[in-house]
Length: 250
Image 1 (cartoon, rainbow, N blue to C red):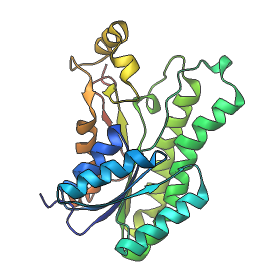
Image 2 (tube, helix red, strand yellow):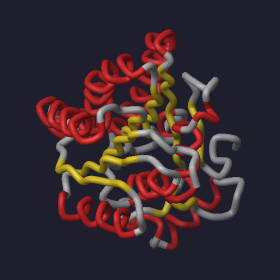
Image 3 (cartoon, rainbow, N blue to C red):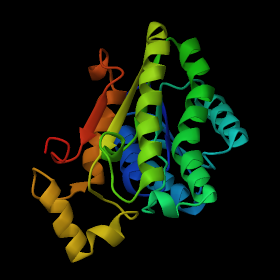
């Protein structure tokens, strides 16, 4: 498996769920992977498992809403591997709170973790990609960034912002051979979504919304990320790629 040979990738939120699967798959395809997460014990365990499987990975504790932390992560990556080819802005939180019930603290927390983190990651990584002759950035949004989502105003706004920020960066840095795309997962089985997927009524609702009669797996999102990170997507930038079982098609 050599689709990512010679490439260095940073994956945020890699301690569990989609980030874990994305980091693992990139490593399996030959990338040197820097895994970051606010939960250091979890991300360290993932990095260790990748190393035991023959991959090259390191783990860093990371508050993605902190600019100082981003500076440290980027510096450590360059110090360890000499360059950055791929950035996967995967870290994020979900919040199902109605607009009128959302406090300013809740709004700011969702925006800081879901949007400011993407801005900071690109701000600190892109100069290194420019110096290295290019790169690929994959920002994980959501189907909520493509369509309205009832009862989750702040979350929906944050994911829409990730979508448009990705497009703006794609336009700004295409001339430097930097591709920026967003991925929009639908109903994916992860630790963060388990409370919904395991509820029979919620599961039935999810299945009523999809064209494919099942929830998705984190590994299926990882395959989309791998494609966008690889040279196979060398002429793909500024797009939103739904991995949603056909929710947006309906």
